[in-house]
Length: 410
Ligand SMILES: Nc1ncnc2c1ncn2[C@@H]1O[C@H](COP(=O)(O)OP(=O)(O)O)[C@@H](O)[C@H]1O
Ligand SMILES: [Mg+2]
Image (tube, rainbow, N blue to C red; front, side, top):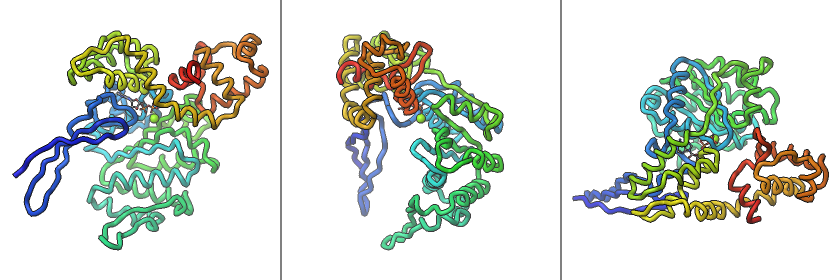
């Protein structure tokens, strides 16, 4: 006997519908099947190729490099879609079949110990659902992680509860991890996201150390991705650096506007809604095709359009307002953490949109700034913390939404 009802839950603003099939035998088993998300403009995570726009050529490029034994350095500004592309590549059936894939985001790490911890944990998490001989060797080979291996006193189920403090000698643990990888039953692909971060580690020469280990590792290939163009370029393209010419450099451009418009139109149509093509193009243009901003806007535009209706240009303004106001608290938190001198300069640049001649007397007077040198040092810090970016035409606040909020609301 079985019946089915629909229920849903909301995860990070998206509604997921489930199809629960109740099988009544001795006990009730709930079989859960994810049907679809209500809002198809997914932001901040990768669900499946259904919600992923294009990147066909880029996926093929990655496949070609990896299959021919070349590592890749993927370099582009933030929020264009690097992490998404790697997740998409890893989700391809043939890749999943042929390789073990691991994705480590090291943006928040500050030391080799944290790097080792993050890598070890990702490998464990990926292998957890499997039962293979290789998996069973995890704690045999990575002996320094044994302290984290626990058996639940009640159920006897194994768990892995490792603390950062458990890593005594990161280099040794790293050796063990690489020794473990070398025993893998399938070749591995390890993506290290925000790789430029290793340059900021407290220990010296981490780059050289990693390069040596990676070179010796025959069972894994690597995708290094990073947002800081000059740091990444310097790492892979300057002869004095350990990773010099060790990987194929790959850039990422915005998804072409027509391709994105086809995708967005389809997402609306499939769910009984319509959208004027010009709306998509306007949004794409306003945010220079930067996927994150465009997807955020499309998500809101979709939400604002009732089923059966057509999303038209006049709604853009309301969507923009909603998206920006939803972030207001995080902008306030962010501003409370930056020094007043930088804050004034940030707002001045936001008001300009794109600011040229920021050290000119005119600019300084217009925004009541202190002096050319104080503007210069503030800009330097703001660039370093990614709040500002330098374009061909001048400086702008990197986050388009923050920029609008600073210029109009704050
Ligand atoms: N091809 C795509 N189709 C749909 N959404 C995408 C695509 N690429 C990226 N995104 C979304 O855009 C946002 C930014 O992409 P992300 O991969 O995180 O950028 P990056 O790693 O370059 O900073 C993510 O929230 C992601 O969900
Ligand atoms: Mg990323």
